[in-house]
Length: 156
Image 1 (tube, rainbow, N blue to C red):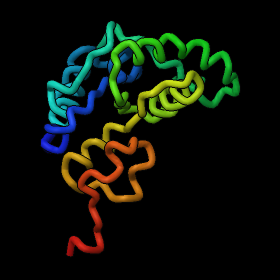
Image 2 (cartoon, helix red, strand yellow; image 1 turned 180 degrees about the horizontal axis):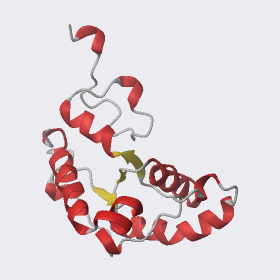
Image 3 (cartoon, rainbow, N blue to C red; image 1 turned 120 degrees about the vertical axis):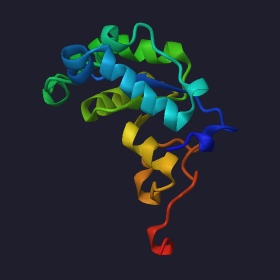
């Protein structure tokens, strides 16, 4: 893994701590592991922490089945706290390691008119390894859509 792709771009990221693995299970230790990976792929200088964070981070509001519950407006109202937290960082992207967090954080940006993009952690890992294919960039902004596109058909 390398953050060289972002050395000159200086794109800023924040990270959502997933409730199940961080707040409800392993705590700050796993949150620190998450940050080690994030810093390795985007550059330490390009990570902007939310406040509060790690075990004290706010829930995004999409987990525990709430995302699929049908109570969309209630979910968004609850999620406004997370949206405001992300916006206050000024980051260009919010990294999520959880599928529910990704769907919720992405929806919050769309609903409230946020300017940040939401990206899966695995997407950035693949980008940093140079193996992110052209069909795996749906959630990347225009600033990252063409970075080191891996074409498996030409890799042989």
